[in-house]
Image 1: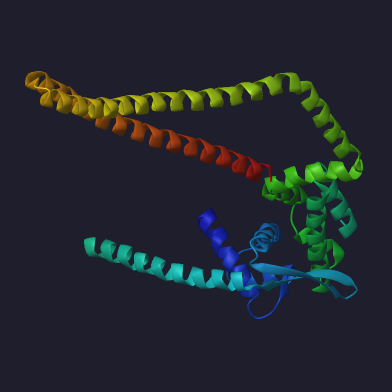
Image 2: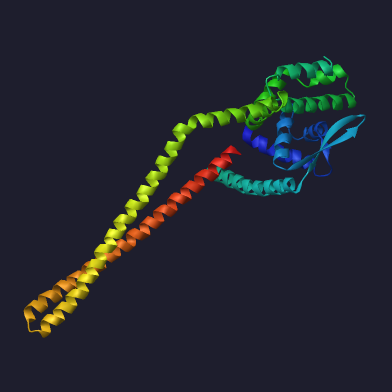
Length: 106
Length: 210
């Protein structure tokens, strides 16, 4: 998959993993893993980007005697998911058009 | 490799980067190891499953935002040497500006003088054209009066030619008047543009400095 495209989709995947409840790094990876390959090194800059664009909020909480960073989705983050779905819909239309043209030519 | 060894080595590899950035990365990777252990892995397994430490370091380097590198490098210097370095730079700036004054001050005066000269010159041109227009008007009025006087004193032909000159004067007055009016308008627009672009320049500079 195209790197740029994968990057954008991963952003949305991470946001989606936070929709139900705030989550932390390791759990986000485990939640996304079945659908898309993601490693710790990939997640770090994504979380950072999302934090800087105010799509997620970071909250440090104690867990088993240590501190863990919990990420929760913001309104901006939710809007990004909606925008992604809208965009994808128009991508599907383009896909259908291209597929139809190719089949028509055969 | 234990978690501590892993984090120590990672920190060492990122030595050249701002502390704030490195701490952030270390925190993240530390949490990752802890969570893997909590999930049932041994410490060795947890560290091993993260992959090659050189790759991790490289990735962190590649993703580190340039802005924070620049921003933090200044901050780090400031904190490590206290406020000394910032007062040091202030003193340096003061000294430099004093030293530069013999050049900068005359330069500033020159620029202001040029602007002043420009204002004077442009308005002088405009005023002289207004004067031409005014003289055209004067020519018209006096020509009309003279031609009437001449007409009634019986010099019909001369009166007619004087009337012609008066009309010509009126024409010139209208022509010069228009020219002077538009030149005045042009000068005002020009100076408005100069002021606007100066303002823009200052604002942009401020933004860049921010």
